[in-house]
Image (cartoon, rainbow, N blue to C red; front, side, top):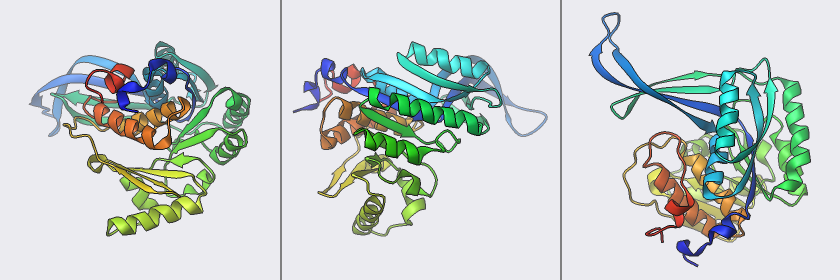
Length: 316
């Protein structure tokens, strides 16, 4: 089957629950005409601003943009950015299952952009309270049977403290569990269906590799030690490589100009989850995810790939 032959109705059968660290991406766009007299830094005259879903919420937004039925489970603060995030989820046709923590500042990534170039990023964040995380775990147990595919999007902000229990519950329910990992301790992801580290994340866990054969040995050893069905290594301009017990499948990157890589990993795992939920084989799902990642890096900031972009005219 070619890429253009997956009907939209099939995609719409996919049911994806995203769990993890949500954040609000704020963009201030402006121009620079002078250097500050106070310090050797540019003065940015802000012309307009945008707010977009970030982190795990961007994964949910990407799956919904393709046409999947999507839920988003996680913790936000009881603050203005949290309310904005909730509104943006609704506008993106994502079902929100949000737990509010009054002690939490909803994570914000503020980017200042001038002349199509990011000049500065400012982060606002702190970790959620233990009792709120316990309530998320309870809600997850209640929701796990309502969705076919579970995506655990770990940004290291504390929202997936109980990720090991979530993996166990998801697999016990017979669900596919896909994880976008963080940090250098992957033992908490043991038993998941698939993880999607990028090159830097992989290197932090298995060390530097000298050759492709060396990488294959390290990747397969990691996959087996974690009892994963598959490991998908995303490799930027080198494409991506899928490691399973049966084979090693390399998919070359789509040749196109890279404009902005932020959020590309979100698009990849969202596309994978949507395709798996739609009944597509893992090998074919990887092909679609690779193409989606190639499309989204041609857009500014955290962005989505729609069904027409992925499957429309010229997509095959």
